Image (cartoon, rainbow, N blue to C red):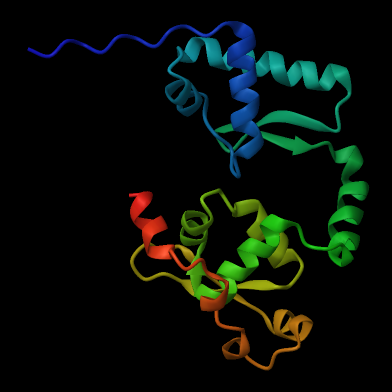
Amino acid sequence: MTAAPEPAPELSDAELRGALEAILLVVDEPVSELVLAQVLEQPAERVGPLLDEIAAGYTAAGHGFELRRAAGGWRLYTRPEYATYVERFVLDGQSVRLTQAALETLAVVAYKQPVTRSRISAIRGVNCDGVIRTLVTRGLVEECGTEQDSGAFLYRTTTLFLEKLGLNTVAELPPLAPFLPDDVEELADATR
């Protein structure tokens, strides 16, 4: 006979608040109270009221962002009164240099195109949704259809990408082999 698993320990209010905030910072679509409760192994009756409290706290403190219900879940949003600043940053920021994460993601798209976001995330080992949105906004990456099996969007580089790199086609990208470590197969075996 198998023993029933022990219930997860109840988190303190401060720990639960911190865990909720951490998750809400990385979601790219609203997440339901039930999903949050399941992930954190806490009663849903605690999660909902604490989310309301967190949202009220952000509003009372006058943060530039707010936590609100949308589409059956919770998500962080910028406050409408700061929309002009956010818009200026997003649009004018296009001349700003790309971050390391954006460069890595762009390289994966360039060498693996057409490629899905989930494949890019698997290669990089981190969620790349926000970075992909940035690259699309800057015109360096674009959607180019959907994967037949999963229906996931496929991404490829754009002509602007080629223009910025001074290339005629992606076939002119340098080979990756000289940049890989000599023991790449050993490294791959070690991670299995």
